[in-house]
Length: 115
Image (cartoon, rainbow, N blue to C red):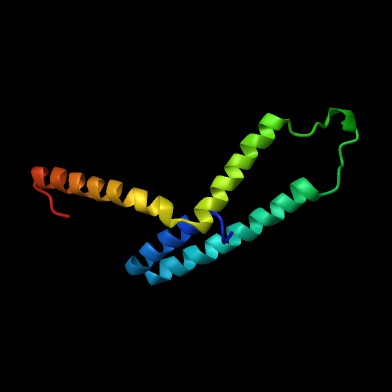
């Protein structure tokens, strides 16, 4: 979903894959769209569908506790923050990725392989 952290990651993966194979990237993009539609359909059926279990009454249903609500809120804020301000995470990971690529290149060079 646009505006959430997963969307940014998926978009960056598709952007990188586009350079390798346009056809496979288009297929992957349709797959992501299908997965999003399917997920929304499942959420609607599971959480908002008709209640059909006659053996289970409403006395067993409880609202979230304050602690659970705090944890869910923290996760929601983080997910929305990643979607709206992804650069704050990308800046941190750029140095780490550069170091990882340099170390991998040195390892391959030491083994006699080329990148």
